[in-house]
Structures are given as structure tokens and as C-alpha cells.
Image 1 (cartoon, rainbow, N blue to C red):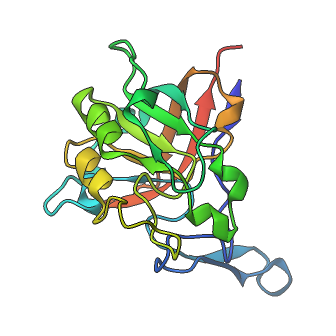
Image 2 (cartoon, one colour):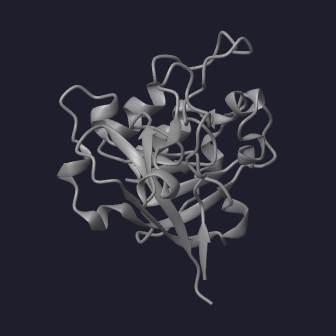
Length: 214
């Protein structure tokens, strides 16, 4: 069985504050041109996407430097659905997985708020949790906007700043997947396939799919 873990890309969809707006408009139509082509304008971190180290690390690796098999993960789910808005994910939620796993998917349930202001006030990784992932060589996926806290008027003074969690993970050559959805439909261990568009740079939208044995 395969589970679609991706948000669709469409005009006006939610983005990180300040990122390019997403626009999908017809460029050619069947009536006028005999075929259909859309114009798509968006940032490299649109929708369900992967962050490469070049996103936050000067001189960091770009997507084009990875073989395609790097985007297939043995994923372990960390259930964090009991956490509330802007609550840090503690170290204790990082699973003690065997040597086969190479990614932790933090299931916050925050995809239920997709497209609303509440989506920006998601739970986020504590520095200790991010450090544990880095120490164990685990990439990170979240069903939220960001593994760092996203700035809003509800931010607290004690929250990590300056993309600290991104630096911890990407600085250790560990990829980050953001804006997943439907993590409630996969088991605690599954194969995550998240092949990015063939962009060379700092990140790209992916079609994230969870592969679950029948």
C-alpha cells in the first residue's frame, strides 16, 4: 500500500512567512491553443518539500550532489500529537531505533491546521531532540511548517532563534522534510520515498509517499 503524504500545489497555498507566493495559472488552453499548459510560480520550499544543507549552511551541499537513493528513507514515527501549540518536542520523543532507520517522522497532527493561521504555531523540535537526531544520524520529517519555531505574534522569548534546529540537522548533512501530511495513516515504521524535483539548489518540492507492506 502507498500513502500520499504530500499537500497539493495550488495558487495561494500556505507558505513560510515571506516566501514567494504560489501561483498556478493556465498559459495555454484547449479552446485557444488545442492543448493545455500551466504557468507555475513558486519558491524552492513550496508545499511538501526537502531542505538541503545549502538552505542554511554557507557552502553546504545542494540537492544535485545527492544520489536519488538518498531520498528513500527507513522512517520511524515519533507520535507527538499530544503536544500543544508552540510546545517544544522533547528529547524523550526521539525514538531509540535500530541501525536500519535513517529518519524520524515527527507526527504532530498539525497538518489538520494546514491553510490556517494556526498552522504557523506548530510544535517544534527542542535543541536536545535535534541534537539527538544529529548524534544518531537521523534525518527529520515533520507534518508541520518547520522543525524550528515559526515567528508569529505568539512566539515566546525562550524559543530557539536563528534556525538553530536547521543548523543542527543540515550542518550534519541530515536532510529535512517539511509540510508532510497523513502521517496518521502509516505505521510506526515505514518506507518514506520523497524524490525532489530535479532542482540543483537549496531545496525542492517532493512527492512524499509512505510505502506500507500489505
